Amino acid sequence: MPHYKIAIVGAGPAGYFAAQALQNSQSDELTFSIDMIERLPTPWGLVRSGVAPDHPKIKTVAKVFEKIAVEPNFRLFGNVELGRDIQVNDLIERYDAVVMATGSAIGKKLGIFGENLKNSISAAEFVPWYNGHPDYADFDMDLSGKVAVVIGAGNVAMDCARMLALDPTDLDPTDTADHALKALHESNIRKVYICGRRGPEHAAFTAPELRELPKLEHTDVHMDAMVIADAHARAAAKGEIEKHLESNLEAMRLVAETPKDSNERELIFHFLAAPKEIKGDGKVQEIVFGINEVENDAIVDSGKTFAIEADLVISAIGYESEPIAGVAFEKGKISNLDGRVPNTNVYAVGWAKRGPSGVIGTNKSDAADVVKLLIEDLKLPKATGDITELLPTGHEVVTQEVWQRINAAEVAVGETQGRPRVKATSIAALLGLGKA
Ligand code: NAP
Image (cartoon, rainbow, N blue to C red):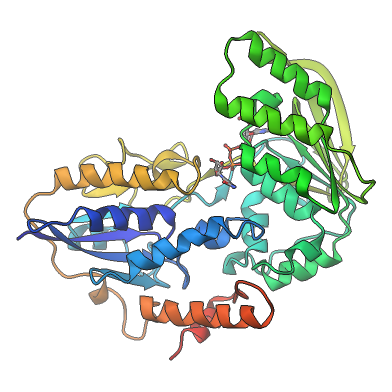
């Protein structure tokens, strides 16, 4: 009975769904052993360090990951970094196939003047900061000013804006990192703008996220009803409006029409606002936008501008993958054809494969498709050895057992505070929690 050894690099949703697809493909004729390699001592990828803390339901998918992880053919190798502790060629030689599920962690750049001023940051810094990612625990987050501007009309921009605009007491019962919770309690930010460069009909927000906005008790959310109505008219003029767009525009109409409560905290949406320049003497003071118009469904620059005086600018305009030695990258993702890296036994899944798009569930069907190709490509088993022979003696590997101890310890502290968990935010602290 052929038995194949598969290495999966990256313990985020795409990696786990690839493992699940492999497990589900087993039969009397085909079996797999799966080694999942993760740079951090914690698995779950964006479910831990991306999903907003006030969205605990989305994080329940971690239960699925833990079921996959306790199958007898699965081993976790956390605290092992590809490129530092092991090289991709080491895996290529030792495993029948290598699945890269390494995501995209670098925030795209706006490419405008003033982008590098202090307090002009990326969602790729702000999000892992509030989620307690060890690389960002010490990030210098300045919330001393009153006005923040978030650039982008996608769900990440929405998360960033909401996290800044919420009353922080709403975050008390969440797993927001302690350092971020403290900083958000002390934050002076009261006005948060969220600016999309195209119209409401082109926004990448999804309806569930928009429908949450009128429910924010301590924040007034402003959208211009006329702007939404114009967008609806433009969409209708093109024919039948697609269901998801109708749902988005309806959710925006409701936001626009929800009575305001004169809350001190405000979240203000601007559409058709293209960032042109960030101004400031050493740090952000103002951001200038070009005003766009929609003409025959094309976006055109009207030549007019407006400016917002701001203390903080967060760009949430998408991500690209961090290059890994030994793997070819193009256009911010691993060079691949439907997940196959040509002429190798390497495959890519998730954001590393297709770029930063889709919700967590998108990775399930996507990984299953790639695993189907991987199985089609399998020849006779050739795997020799495995990762254990590559790591120096004494390397502290976070196995599933160690991770379960870390997880249990975080959850136990959380229980005493009425929170899902209290995250350890340094590698040393995490490894400490994992000790028997
Ligand atoms: P996204 O959905 O692709 O949105 C990126 C936004 O940035 C778009 O509005 C885009 O505008 C804008 N943008 C790009 N370049 C720009 C520039 N130079 N200047 C101004 N604006 C620019 O990406 P994302 O928000 O990072 O989200 C990534 C994926 O994760 C998405 O699939 C998202 O749905 C998912 N996600 C889901 C949730 C959830 O389910 N709650 C939460 C977070 C993320 P254009 O359209 O004009 O290019």
